[in-house]
Length: 451
Image 1 (cartoon, rainbow, N blue to C red):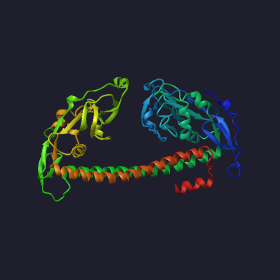
Image 2 (cartoon, rainbow, N blue to C red):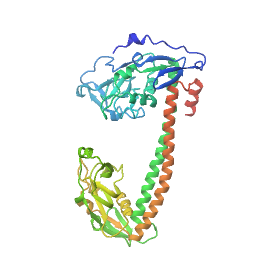
Image 3 (cartoon, rainbow, N blue to C red):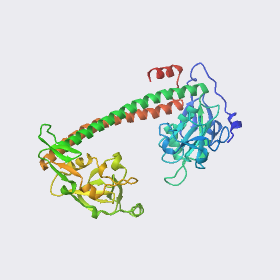
Image 4 (cartoon, rainbow, N blue to C red):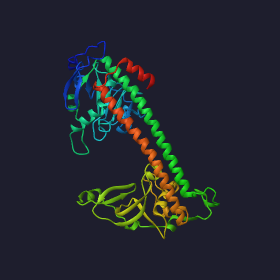
């Protein structure tokens, strides 16, 4: 689309000795309040081409191009451009873009989550992305990175969400909405200064968030190690140990029993019944939890179980990735589908101890299937465990509970710090991009020096 003539209608604000005159005027835009009086109003269509084509002719059939599906664009503006394909092998209909363009995810929930990016560079001339991207190609009136921050602004995204069209779950930001949205622009030099300031500031914030996340990861690893040690070796490091013939249990406390899971746990898999999503959608009184492989996935209007049971996943990638809990308690009245095993201790024992014990184990040698990993009832039943006496189970459960409380308290504090940092990042972008906070050369030098 050629917007050259319209772009010439955008006046360039004058660069003063200071940063504006300190006065503001009402933007008269639903998502904006007051903006600096010296900033210039323009619709996006006048400062960027929407869905542009090849800037330098179509690629040759064997020319390598970058392929970027939606999942390779992050919610913090990063692109994985490592996937390359010959032009002739790329599916028709994908969205063309190139270095210097701005990507904006148009479909829910990707749009609300902040997916988009400034394409600073590419390993190829051209790239092809998801059809769910709007591509903006800035002209000379706007700094490309400044435009990215404008469209990334969480307040702008919330306004865009209010103006989505389409059916639930498939709502999109229309090209008309994007083209007609009015922005307020400082002089080009100030745009560049704001973009550079936000680059440095966001990099510093992201580094702080990454450091906090590493703390969480280390804490989580320590928590798992402490729990595994407790449930597999007990609490007394001086207790006499014995050798076993089980690969993952080289030594266990001498008074513990090494048994197959089915010798101490009873299966209730014959009771479980899957209910389709369509049938669940027709239910009017959905008051009982409906469990799947990783926990509660819905509510239903009836129940199969009444009591406390141990559930452990039967299938799914999580059997190997362990990104979610594999074993968990289910109590009260509930329903279970055919993706989780249902267990109870055969005679006695502490349910929570067994959950912690089962969660601490590595089942990879007993998992079958490549496309769909599966832990069959037969394989789970013959998995060997070391089981302490009932009283010791309770002592270990109490110890693990206290440790979990301590670890979770620390983790909550770190997560709160991460949330504060991310909220500050959002507010900083909004303030800078809308002129509520003016950025001087001194500000830029400081953030580059200390950011």
